[in-house]
Image 1: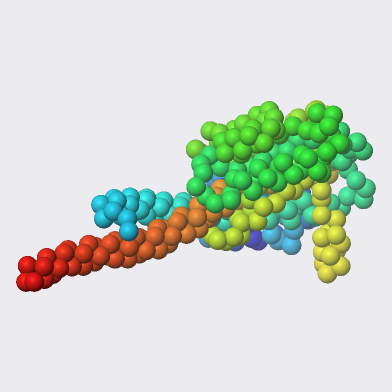
Image 2: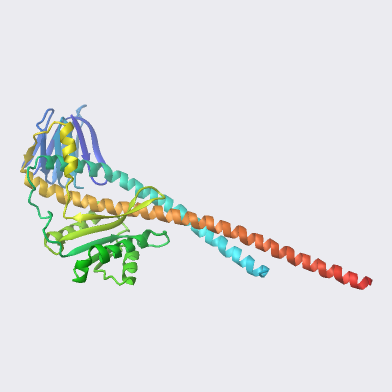
Length: 79
Length: 297
């Protein structure tokens, strides 16, 4: 599964991942392979990313939008 | 033939002007590169946001009610003219002023007669230019260019969007220079509000691709109410970045021309100077020779 985290100023993260936990506005949720196409709003919080080599990284965000389709996750972070 | 000393002073002054203009060109070239980088950085975000917006509007059957949508009447107009704080950049600022005047006096003539057209300027030169044309500027943002970040720009964008949502204005127009390349800037005026979602683009996409049944969380309407303001802010930010890059490009070209011109001027002056010097020498020799001849005879 491919993940992109983009802010207006720069690209924070791109790469293959196993799983990502996102701070959805209705509560935190996780995205794995073959997730159903989803469009959601993110609230302020942490994004937790487990990469293919099991390295876990965190990104602090102030809110944003996530789109997931065809095993591609795009996270548009407000800042 | 002009005085030798005068020409010498002239040459010295043109030379120092040339030094200044070529230095300014160099500075603009460096700043242009920075501004271009900023445009390149915003591009992926803007493109992705647009993609999301398109896939959302793919899933909307009818026009979603939102506070930035089209209104039937367009009584109150707001024009935002984006130019620069500094001059010496060719027609960059005056083009913005000209276009704004044109919009006020031709396109929005009806509203202007009723005093319903307001102008906000970004950049000192735009405000000065419009004032001299007799157009009232209600707001002028000059301290904007010191530090351009998405946050500082989106603050202003939010104020403008709020004034539309509150019903202070029914139509908002942006006037700015779009950056094409270092030598070419396109002056554009685009409708900022009400929002226009590219419908025809949507249809093109649906033909080739399978329509994805998205899960919307919490609901499509709430997503639209987040995405549209965000994309408006990005649009505004892009306009500002474009204008900044265009400004440096325009100044670079203008200064390049000025340097070339100074070079030509120096060449011409030097020729004149040499001619004058030669004439003076010839005159002197003539005097000596004729003096000697007079002594002989």
